[in-house]
Image 1 (cartoon, rainbow, N blue to C red):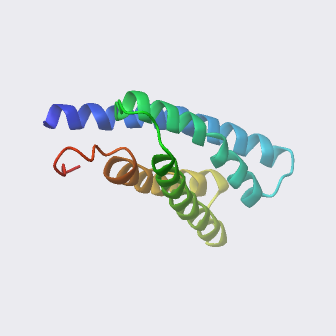
Image 2 (spheres, helix red, strand yellow):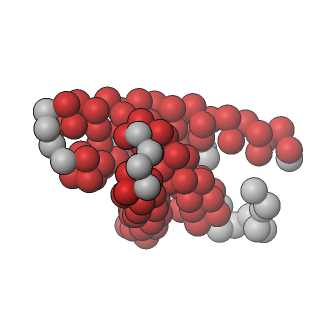
Amino acid sequence: MLKKQMTTLIRFGTVGVGNTLIDFCVFFLLTALQVPYLIAQVCSYTSGIANSYIWNRIWTFEVKKKADKQEMIRFIAVNLAASGMTFLLLFGLQKAGLSLLISKLIATVGGMVINFIGNRLWVFRDPLKKSESM
């Protein structure tokens, strides 16, 4: 069981790296084009959501059943929560005077924690299995 959990965590991290690269590229491209950083954050985070859903569903959590409306709503809810955390952290860290890069890195980690827990325990859980620990 521990091997499966480690594999899931490594896959989630791999997908997360791809999503983060998309996020960072869009974010810094937009800020370089003088888009305000909070608007750039919303756009950049949103840009990775479809990639995240597809790869985490198929590869990370290996969901076999057909996607349904409730799963997509749960996925969007978790991403909104993670995005909200990222947004608030980015705003707070910028107000505290940290550099934009350090602020973005810390905010991204905070969002990733919420995203993993929400996806693992709520979005892509197998309702037929007894509850599993993370």
